[in-house]
Length: 173
Image (cartoon, rainbow, N blue to C red; front, side, top):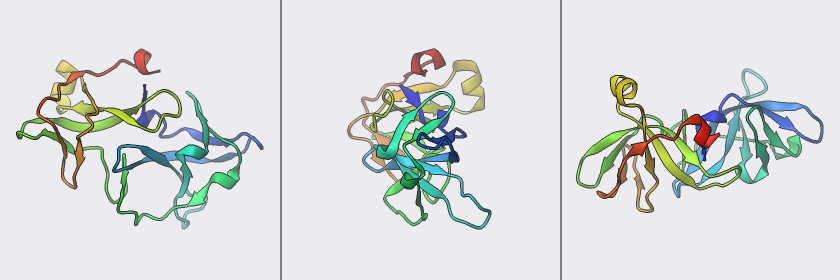
């Protein structure tokens, strides 16, 4: 498994030219819990963000995101109501509380995990219980249930969801 936040800050390199197309700045997720793509920084101060669809990414390594060529980079506008951003944007996932259907709060979303290499499906969430809880107990991992509801103010999961210890870097690397 891979953490979405490990993508943030990586250079995006076009394999065809070896040129850097930008730097990954956020991950875009659909309401169906699939990763849709990666936002990259704008080339100029007053230009808008740019976007690479997940299917156009060749690979995500430890040190870079690779794309075939710069033609796959397209303009992005922020008015997509069906999309969720991990870190920023109009509707961000990080920081949303995760609550069971019976009203118990499990924690706050810190990150999401997706499968090996280019698998789009979100497999689970890394949850924080707050600074002190994170320091004393560590963060927790919640496998993504099929019935999770992504709401404006919370992620609602079924009552039977159980928290586990978050995977270590070696387990997801």
